[in-house]
Image 1 (cartoon, one colour):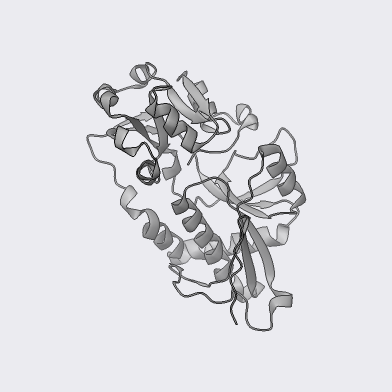
Image 2: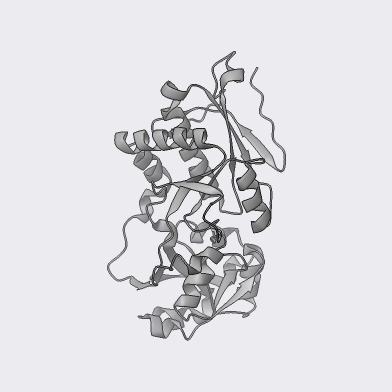
Length: 299
């Protein structure tokens, strides 16, 4: 009998993935009787949107499925336990709670020759996480439709999460910002005029706004994108090289046969095109040395 165990912290996902993505039906990721030989993988999902959770979980399952012929069955668990950044890094150094995370390349770097995570250099979001849309109060929308360059954007104050890596890019670009402790608090602060705009990823801005209790007061500026490099990779604890090898093989196979891109299109294909009248303001790539203090990324 198939059992699905769900707790507040951990979700055991046991349904297989086809070449194009996860199936609606659930079934064991391991063959019957093979649980003792299955590769056990735990993916840590932080505070990101539901769409990213679904897509990035599907990517890891796809990679494990693609590598099944060489490495055998697998069991994938998902944990969303909330941890501070130091505890998260310590966990990945030990590989105790989870072995895999999907995150921007610099999110968990430390000032050391030995890094807690090994990144698999195959971008999962095709650079779209770095395309930011500005969410503003409706009575300020006209002000932002007139923004055409970085100098004009500097007149406005952004709202960023206290542990978002985005802070480093805004600081480098001399863009002022105010920090909040959570996405819900940021929406509340924006609605009450504590800052002027909330830059969220184009993949998630619309859904995040719709889910906010302040949606009626706020709007997305549809002719402005702020862009900076935030490639998202699957990253594996350095203490689990066998999982890194398996995921590397699986992602390479999925990229070669087109199933990785098909999965991306399934979730995000609508976001690839940018209208000609949209103003794109580019922020410089963040330097590796300064990025050693990098934190998490925003939703």
